[in-house]
Image 1 (cartoon, one colour):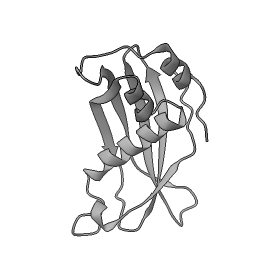
Image 2 (cartoon, helix red, strand yellow):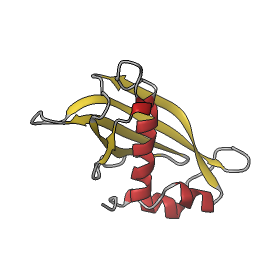
Image 3 (tube, helix red, strand yellow):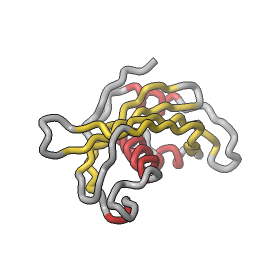
Length: 144
Protein backbone atom coordinates (compact mmCIF):
# COMPACT_ATOMS: atom_id res chain seq x y z
CA UNK A 1 0.00 0.00 0.00
CA UNK A 2 1.28 3.46 -0.93
CA UNK A 3 1.30 6.56 1.23
CA UNK A 4 -1.50 8.88 0.14
CA UNK A 5 0.49 12.07 -0.29
CA UNK A 6 -1.42 14.90 -1.89
CA UNK A 7 0.58 17.14 -4.20
CA UNK A 8 -0.17 20.79 -4.93
CA UNK A 9 -3.59 21.09 -6.51
CA UNK A 10 -4.32 21.94 -10.11
CA UNK A 11 -6.80 24.74 -10.71
CA UNK A 12 -9.42 24.76 -13.45
CA UNK A 13 -11.82 27.55 -14.36
CA UNK A 14 -15.21 26.23 -15.47
CA UNK A 15 -15.73 27.19 -19.09
CA UNK A 16 -18.91 27.37 -21.12
CA UNK A 17 -18.03 24.07 -22.82
CA UNK A 18 -18.08 22.36 -19.38
CA UNK A 19 -21.70 23.30 -18.68
CA UNK A 20 -25.20 22.35 -19.70
CA UNK A 21 -27.86 24.87 -20.77
CA UNK A 22 -28.47 25.95 -17.16
CA UNK A 23 -24.80 26.81 -16.54
CA UNK A 24 -24.13 23.79 -14.32
CA UNK A 25 -21.13 21.57 -15.05
CA UNK A 26 -22.40 18.50 -16.90
CA UNK A 27 -21.83 15.27 -14.97
CA UNK A 28 -19.72 13.79 -17.78
CA UNK A 29 -17.07 16.53 -17.45
CA UNK A 30 -16.09 15.27 -13.99
CA UNK A 31 -14.60 12.11 -15.53
CA UNK A 32 -12.33 14.27 -17.68
CA UNK A 33 -11.32 16.39 -14.68
CA UNK A 34 -10.48 13.26 -12.66
CA UNK A 35 -8.35 11.92 -15.50
CA UNK A 36 -6.55 15.27 -15.95
CA UNK A 37 -5.68 15.44 -12.25
CA UNK A 38 -4.55 11.79 -12.15
CA UNK A 39 -2.29 12.11 -15.20
CA UNK A 40 -0.74 15.31 -13.86
CA UNK A 41 -0.04 13.50 -10.60
CA UNK A 42 1.84 10.81 -12.54
CA UNK A 43 3.78 13.53 -14.41
CA UNK A 44 4.77 15.16 -11.10
CA UNK A 45 6.07 11.79 -9.97
CA UNK A 46 8.23 11.47 -13.09
CA UNK A 47 6.16 8.63 -14.52
CA UNK A 48 3.73 10.24 -16.93
CA UNK A 49 2.42 9.10 -20.28
CA UNK A 50 5.50 10.27 -22.21
CA UNK A 51 7.76 8.08 -20.06
CA UNK A 52 5.40 5.12 -20.41
CA UNK A 53 5.23 5.58 -24.17
CA UNK A 54 9.04 5.63 -24.33
CA UNK A 55 9.03 2.20 -22.70
CA UNK A 56 6.38 0.81 -25.05
CA UNK A 57 3.64 1.04 -22.41
CA UNK A 58 0.28 2.75 -22.05
CA UNK A 59 -2.46 3.12 -19.44
CA UNK A 60 -6.03 1.85 -19.83
CA UNK A 61 -8.81 2.71 -17.43
CA UNK A 62 -10.18 -0.46 -15.82
CA UNK A 63 -12.58 1.27 -13.45
CA UNK A 64 -13.76 4.81 -12.92
CA UNK A 65 -15.74 5.76 -9.83
CA UNK A 66 -17.23 9.18 -9.16
CA UNK A 67 -19.35 10.36 -6.27
CA UNK A 68 -21.13 13.66 -6.89
CA UNK A 69 -21.83 15.92 -3.91
CA UNK A 70 -22.52 19.42 -5.21
CA UNK A 71 -22.69 21.28 -8.51
CA UNK A 72 -20.06 23.48 -10.09
CA UNK A 73 -21.21 26.37 -12.25
CA UNK A 74 -19.94 28.48 -15.12
CA UNK A 75 -16.79 30.45 -14.17
CA UNK A 76 -16.30 28.71 -10.80
CA UNK A 77 -12.68 28.02 -9.88
CA UNK A 78 -12.12 24.35 -9.17
CA UNK A 79 -9.26 22.76 -7.27
CA UNK A 80 -8.28 19.24 -8.35
CA UNK A 81 -6.30 17.14 -5.88
CA UNK A 82 -4.91 13.76 -6.85
CA UNK A 83 -3.11 11.13 -4.82
CA UNK A 84 -1.52 7.84 -5.74
CA UNK A 85 -3.29 5.21 -3.66
CA UNK A 86 -1.85 1.94 -4.91
CA UNK A 87 0.79 0.57 -7.27
CA UNK A 88 0.38 -3.06 -8.25
CA UNK A 89 2.58 -5.21 -10.48
CA UNK A 90 0.69 -4.01 -13.59
CA UNK A 91 -1.76 -1.44 -12.30
CA UNK A 92 -2.16 1.96 -10.64
CA UNK A 93 -4.98 3.44 -8.61
CA UNK A 94 -5.33 7.18 -8.10
CA UNK A 95 -7.87 9.04 -6.02
CA UNK A 96 -9.06 12.52 -6.95
CA UNK A 97 -11.12 15.16 -5.17
CA UNK A 98 -12.66 18.18 -6.89
CA UNK A 99 -13.39 21.28 -4.82
CA UNK A 100 -14.97 24.65 -5.58
CA UNK A 101 -12.88 27.59 -4.42
CA UNK A 102 -14.67 30.78 -3.55
CA UNK A 103 -15.85 33.03 -0.80
CA UNK A 104 -16.44 30.24 1.74
CA UNK A 105 -13.68 29.86 4.37
CA UNK A 106 -12.97 26.33 3.12
CA UNK A 107 -13.23 24.88 -0.40
CA UNK A 108 -16.45 22.93 -1.02
CA UNK A 109 -16.08 19.26 -2.04
CA UNK A 110 -18.01 18.78 -5.28
CA UNK A 111 -16.96 15.28 -6.32
CA UNK A 112 -14.51 12.58 -5.43
CA UNK A 113 -13.51 9.43 -7.17
CA UNK A 114 -10.85 7.05 -8.31
CA UNK A 115 -9.23 5.77 -11.47
CA UNK A 116 -7.98 2.19 -11.53
CA UNK A 117 -5.64 1.86 -14.51
CA UNK A 118 -3.96 -1.12 -16.09
CA UNK A 119 -0.47 -0.87 -17.52
CA UNK A 120 -0.45 -2.45 -20.97
CA UNK A 121 1.91 -3.08 -23.87
CA UNK A 122 1.28 -0.17 -26.24
CA UNK A 123 1.17 -2.33 -29.39
CA UNK A 124 -0.64 -5.46 -28.22
CA UNK A 125 -2.81 -4.03 -25.43
CA UNK A 126 -1.79 -6.96 -23.25
CA UNK A 127 -1.15 -6.34 -19.52
CA UNK A 128 2.47 -5.53 -18.77
CA UNK A 129 4.40 -5.33 -15.52
CA UNK A 130 5.54 -1.91 -14.39
CA UNK A 131 9.32 -1.66 -14.92
CA UNK A 132 11.40 -1.29 -11.75
CA UNK A 133 12.57 2.21 -12.73
CA UNK A 134 8.96 3.32 -12.99
CA UNK A 135 8.00 1.65 -9.69
CA UNK A 136 10.88 3.48 -8.03
CA UNK A 137 9.74 6.82 -9.48
CA UNK A 138 6.19 6.20 -8.27
CA UNK A 139 7.40 5.39 -4.75
CA UNK A 140 9.20 8.75 -4.40
CA UNK A 141 7.32 11.80 -3.13
CA UNK A 142 6.04 13.90 -6.04
CA UNK A 143 7.77 17.04 -7.26
CA UNK A 144 5.89 20.31 -6.72
